[in-house]
Image: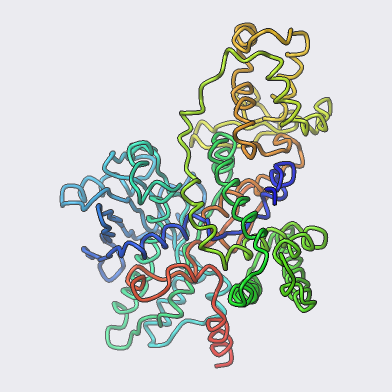
Amino acid sequence: MNLRPPTTVMKAARLGAFHQSRLSFMRQLLRRLKAEDWQFQCSLWTLDSQGVGRAVYTASGPQRSYSLVAFAHDLDPALRSDRVIATAWDATFALFDGIPDAADLDRLEANVPKQEAGRISSSELCMARANRSVRLFEHVVQALAEGRQPQREFIDEVGYLMRTTAVYGSGKFGAADRESIAERAELSAPFQAEMLTVFLIRAFTLDLVEHLARARAPRQAVPLTPQLRRCFGIGNSTGLGMAPFLLNHPVLLNNWVRARETALQRVRAVRQPSSGERRMFTEFLARAQAGIGHWHSEHELQHGRILQLQGDLIRLEQHLASGILQQDSPWDALYRWAENTLSLEAQECLVSLLLEPYGHLVDELGERMQADEQLSFGIDGGMPLSRLRQILAEHYAWVAAIDFSSANSRALFWYVSEEKLEPRIGQRFAEPGEELEQPLAVARDIAQLQAALQPCAGSQTVAGFLLQHPQHRHSVRRVQLAPAFPYADIQDNLIDQTLLPIDLLRCKLSFFGATHFDPRSDRWVRITLFQNAPFPHELGQVAADDWSYPSLDCQEHRRECLVE
């Protein structure tokens, strides 16, 4: 059984249909926290009756502790914004490496609420901020203050009480560099510090609404029921800033996708699943159908995708009735049927569902998803151009299908805004700034490299070529990576007028473990993180990795709540 080829997988439209899976970083984190018996405590809570003040949540593992330092603010509603240009937020956060003392808290309070305008230190791993959901936050506080639970359908519609607008790490604004923590077992997988930050922010947010309800009505207020509490995730608004990451980290992208493709290959190779594995798949399909049935989006494209996915999952369920799961190699047969029958969205949802019964086959692949990209940064100057041409022919044949003489094929350019140092997209023939273009037009640059190579002798070396044509260094480096890292390139023209940047955002967010994709344009999207997950204080009593799709019991509870 071969891996799916990059020509199939690495198209933007398919990457933009990826769903969370067992290999998503949030799920890797909670499995580790559970297996290693991490302990959690809220060691400081000085919020007043208006919800303004400090809180500290500490997670302690076998070797180290990490502390979320939270600052809750009294934000004028007129200042509440998802835009990156915002300067004030309902809450701001830092993930401290260890347990902060009073001096650390004072230093952080002087800087963290300012976000980009402040500075943190190498003692901090992440900095973040979040705003309340205008629609849901007050509804939940008031309901609890009146001694009742909030309306379930309202929770389903929104899904979170706070929405982060940035979670910064990896050296940004003075935080610790990734290299300084990458060797720690608990942080070696990608984005574990960021995922831990969001996991603790979720706990703080739910504690905050219950605190405000008690402050409003000390004798009457009630807490959320545990089952309803888990229905709240953390929202996130993500724009173009995330998209270039996949292009600037080709080895990391390869490792993420290759791990997922290897997992799929292993499951498709199973010849005779146990009855328990077949039951588990069927159950998770039902859970996925129930969960996706509550996805909402006002974006025309995504609304259509959701409806198509819902219909495709019904077709998948009906196909199971044909007895396909009773034959040999049923997972391979099911995938091949889906590939010929269902939409990309449903095909990739099926890929995630196929992994669910097989943690024992796929979970260890998470250890392969990190990358030391410095090891692959060097250029082999001694490589003859004949070998470089061979790699181009084997791995970049897809570029020849793009007509760069067409204005539409060159319509966009990527640049970094001066104001916020964030990636942006400009219209090449209608807007100024083309001279600021970032080297993210991979297909065009490969085509230009191929043209520059035409008059050169095959015996000439890469070093000699680059001495004459230094502008092609970044493309040559990428080409030389291709044989070892075949999933490193998105095989589409990323400066075409028809580009949907949300496909790139969706790909990265799926590896985080995001759900409820709700694009607000083709350039930014809202999603939900950790919805239905256990809270820190519950990890010792419940399964760490049975939450990514709402349980059928939870669905029944939802129906009971609606009836009541």
